[in-house]
Amino acid sequence: VFKYVLAGFDEDGQEKTMEFTADKNLRIGAFLRLFYSENKGVKSWEEVEKDDIPDKAKDRLGVKN
Image (cartoon, rainbow, N blue to C red):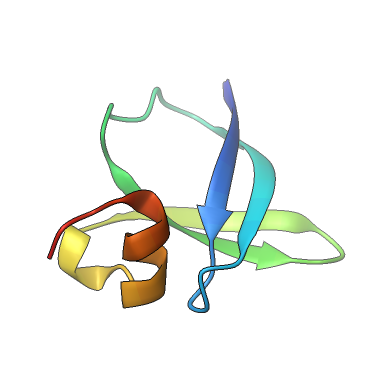
């Protein structure tokens, strides 16, 4: 099991640091969509393409369109 602590951004570009585990080592440079609950933290995650990232989050990440 691999443990991750990452800064993430919501659709409004607000930053939140999140911790989660994965059964595999995640790909370097991958973009992830995290499903988060205030009560449970990160419930699940999936790898996404750059085009799937909300524009305000892209701005905060420094990702070009």
